Length: 137
Image 1 (cartoon, rainbow, N blue to C red):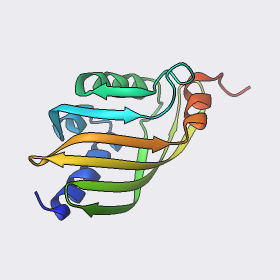
Image 2 (tube, one colour; image 1 turned 120 degrees about the vertical axis):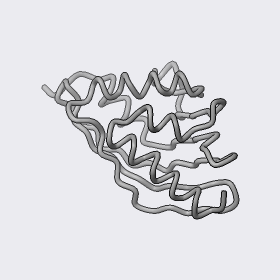
Image 3 (cartoon, helix red, strand yellow; image 1 turned 120 degrees about the horizontal axis):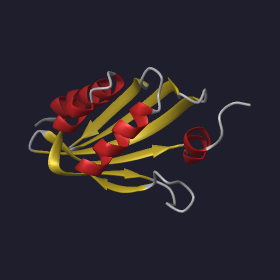
Image 4 (cartoon, one colour; image 1 turned 180 degrees about the horizontal axis):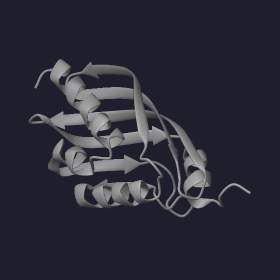
């Protein structure tokens, strides 16, 4: 695929997540795809390198804790070769009342017309406080 096709697929993957279509997100990925969430697992339980099945499981858990899903907005996309860099932001309210407002830099790598690797950079401190901390007091 060319860089424009890769950019379109990167945006589509995030749009599918925003629509709570996890099966659609996973369909955009190769069978051996990996997804990296930075951080130290002992400090942030979601941190680590996930295979396709495990990231799908994590996404389902996340959606189960959100009142109305997670709205993702793409702010910019740059592509070169088989890599696409996406700047995005999200917002969603958790069932415990916490509000998740995140900013991301997501680097996706492509192979054979699908995403084969994702590195998702975000504010891990905010993520931990919202997802693993107490609800609003």
